[in-house]
Length: 220
Picture 1: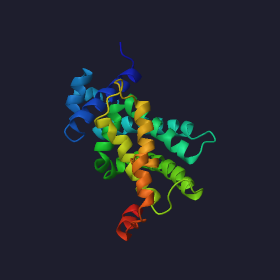
Picture 2 (picture 1 turned 30 degrees about the vertical axis):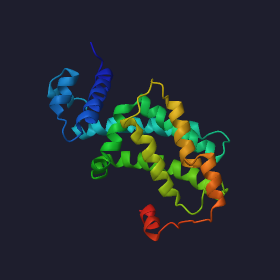
Picture 3 (picture 1 turned 90 degrees about the vertical axis):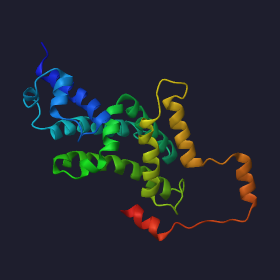
Picture 4 (picture 1 turned 135 degrees about the vertical axis):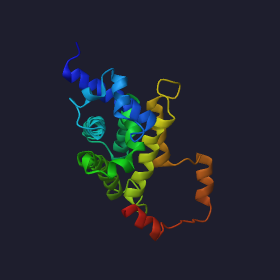
């Protein structure tokens, strides 16, 4: 006999896969019940609504991220090392939790529209602030550029990291660790070869300023 807590976990697990594959809006309570192997009415003994199931999926997921982030940046590392630690932790979580990762990336607008997800929104803000604090510390100590808004850099690297769940296949020749190294290298060191970088250094400097529009967008 399945215990109530085990049943609840099974509901969350089955729903997460359906939400990721079909979207939250397209998934019905009946489909979740069918996947679990119970009647639709039985789900309401555990969750009051479909949104409550979504909240359960994502609250556990975001708590895992926060815990892993705290561990990743707890030691005395440089800002660049901390960025790498956050990238690796994020990719490992995406590898272990692909369905919640896809839900969170695909349903951001749905989540932001409902008061039901206030706790999820708050947890997501804490995750974002962890990144921003690390990036801003690197700007202050001269490790990172001062002319690019920290929030812009965060948004760029965030999408590169989390959206990789749509194409990266862990367990193949291209490991998660290698992907973390490559993402960090590209964002912190760039993609120019050493020879190209040397030629560029000899050419007259041509630095494009960050536009007011870009700065305004970064603050939003």
